[in-house]
Image (cartoon, rainbow, N blue to C red; front, side):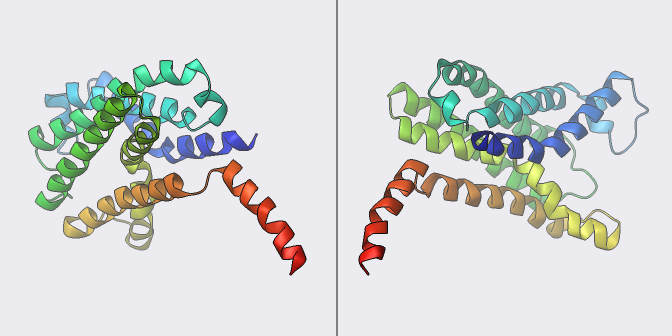
Length: 219
């Protein structure tokens, strides 16, 4: 059961943006009244619809790629063939919306620029991971795919970076403060991804403990 804890945690982290996305799709499907908050989506729904659908599949299916048992099975490769286009869809539509949509009320040009940076980094990571697996470099493939997934899951962490301000003030942050909180979500995820990639594998760690035990007993 331990090997399923990580994918469960990742899906839970993505739950808030997935629910928000489902609400947005429901709103668009119902023919909503146009407001300043949704006008850009109503006028051009295609990128946001593709972004939400791609993100839901990418979040859920991608979480199971962290299960060691599944990585040793052909399921991992089959799922990867769907995850690559879904991840690229998320990244490219994120860039599309950052360029084509008017800035929301609480955003500024700094945040718009950061969206371009991290959207490009996500797409680049996925493409580098794909190139690595095509040349049979599995270690590099894993590293780049984990980084791409970490960026893609940024919206989940951003809900938590915003939470203290929302609780304290009851209002959305704006301007540079909001930009900083959004970027913090991406950076936290990337930091955790790097820790995950650099930590000793469980089997290696267990072997190190076994080797150290006789030395401790001698001492």
